[in-house]
Length: 251
Image 1 (cartoon, rainbow, N blue to C red):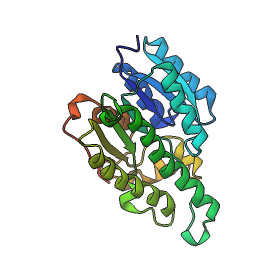
Image 2: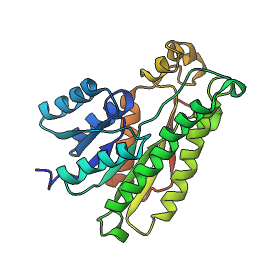
Image 3: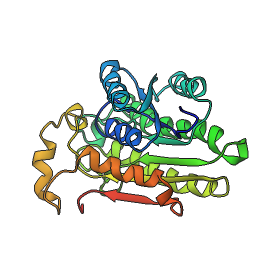
């Protein structure tokens, strides 16, 4: 069956935006490799939902903050499908609100190792499988950035904002690098989205508190981000590469 379906890797695919992307992709006919670092039960639920709806999905455990984790994810791709057509670099972390003069080197190492290095190395693995230079048939990469890259997140987490600024630059450069190799590279910048990531960063009420500052007066949903990602992965976006799409309610 997977010979007919394009194959997509979604890093951090077990919860929030990643889960919405995984479910939407399967609904649109992708075979989805749902990556998770530690939350096996949530990842199982996503895969189960996809299969129950007649779609195709499999699990791939691996922490994108480690080279072993990344190797493990792509070994699942090779064993299960033997090909790759798309990557969504969604896995990422925030941390507790802190000023820069309070941040530890360990915090910064974790932030950039997962959010930046992990995304770059996952993209490299995807390129080795999709680029015509490597005998692939082409494909698409969508990186998940953040409006923090533009706004800076002063007094909250400028390290997170800087990590997403790096993703923006990486998206533009990689798009140009791969433009003649049938691989498109774009990014989506979510604004305030109602997911668990805010609680993991110590701000469980952030969505409620920030809504009045958003021109559309509400937070976004994971599904609204997923819709933008799936558009950029699709043939409808065939002339789009190096673009960064704000999905932020006007922020």
